[in-house]
Image (cartoon, rainbow, N blue to C red; front, side, top):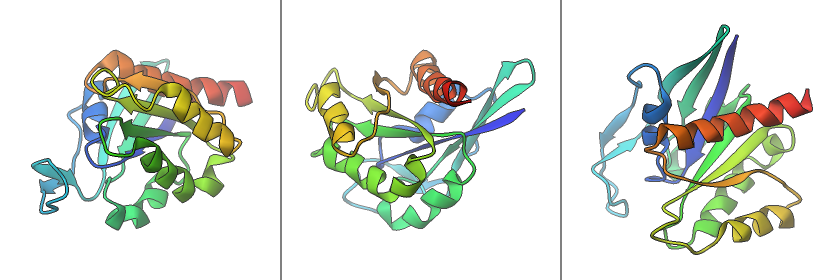
Length: 174
């Protein structure tokens, strides 16, 4: 059985890194040289990232990553179609991480009512504010309740925890 989980979030939030940390294969990436001066990174995703992880018993999780730049937002919903769940990655070192989350909650608002979702917040050690409670409060304002976890997307175990949270939601709803 193949299941699809999509990683989305701002540029630099760690989508490509998360997929690479978890994938059993070298991930397929569509990174190109970054020409956006507002982004402090050499490469940026312009299409999608892909990897997969085999969980055993014939279960394979296909991992897709969206491009982060809003100019590619037309691809976000295309990539997320028919996904078991969505992982929204937030970089807590950005100027306004809560506003970043709002962008993704707004963009996927109609899909999120029936989709499993988890919020992964990175760089919380060096940037402890906003807190995970602040993210939970934002979700509650929108009558949403998704697991919100501090993660290091370079760590396989942290990324696996995000995937496990999506799968647990799906199992609980079945």
